[in-house]
Length: 194
Image 1 (cartoon, one colour):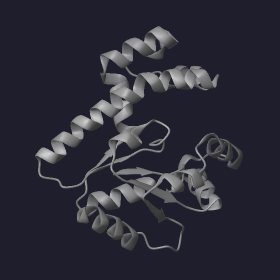
Image 2 (cartoon, one colour):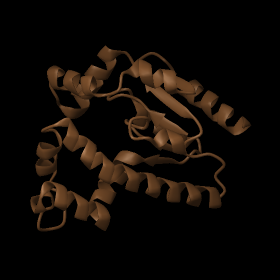
Image 3 (cartoon, one colour):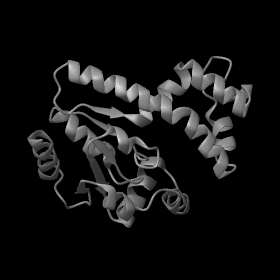
Image 4 (cartoon, helix red, strand yellow):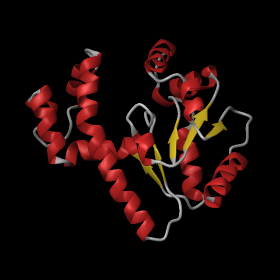
């Protein structure tokens, strides 16, 4: 199962509910950060692409150097994604194999760019987490201490929420007064029926 949604939709909260209810979920954002530091292939390719300053002397990722290069043009973003996404996908598949060997009958991956990154071909079902635009903006402003304008710009660069919903097998509404637990339980029940 793939869990996706735009910034501020609450997909991390939904993923945590799945974990609490016994469905392990791979956090692609966290794992891609780990792999960007630990995977030699990624390190080599990023250094060749961006320059040796992309990693600090202590081996950590120089986020400001990468971000500056990454966001200078869309082609740069595609090049970096083509380096990182295949490694994350491979790492996820290894993780899934471990989950199956441990006896887990279902597991998932949380990714804001699940569809854009091509991960939909390695999951059986897609769960889109949605919330109203204003809710998403407010949540992100609070969480990141960001301005309304910067959050709106980030949202504008993401896949439209309606597109995600069209490609999803399940849609979880995560607006303020909508209970999440019954919706997550419905998805789990449906997944376990297969």
